[in-house]
Image 1: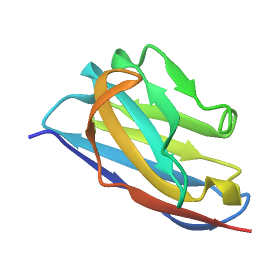
Image 2 (image 1 turned 45 degrees about the vertical axis):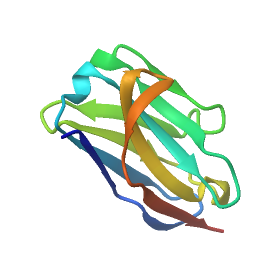
Image 3 (image 1 turned 45 degrees about the horizontal axis):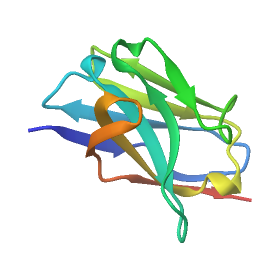
Amino acid sequence: EVQLVESGGGLVQAGGSLRLSCAASGFTVDDYAIGWFRQAPGKEREGVACVSSGARSTSYADSVKGRFTISSDNAKNTVYLRMNSLKPEDTAVYYCAAGSLCGIFASWGQGTQVTVSS
């Protein structure tokens, strides 16, 4: 069974950092594209970052470039999202997803809440 479990969310002050984890089971993260998304209340879901299969490339939303870093640990079968210089507008539920390509995702986690206070 394919499963993605996010963790690492929480409450942080503006300017602070968090590292989100996306632990995968039922498949190997290195074989798939893994993306991070977020959805704030009343807003549409937004793609934040993606790492392609084999970690050959990464991509980021303009709003997080230079502040967020996506990485993978094949030994732990986990993908991370390191978030630095957090802003109140980064407040959202963050989800990870797996798919064949960045932009084509079939499996989703349950999400983890990130709240950035001003």
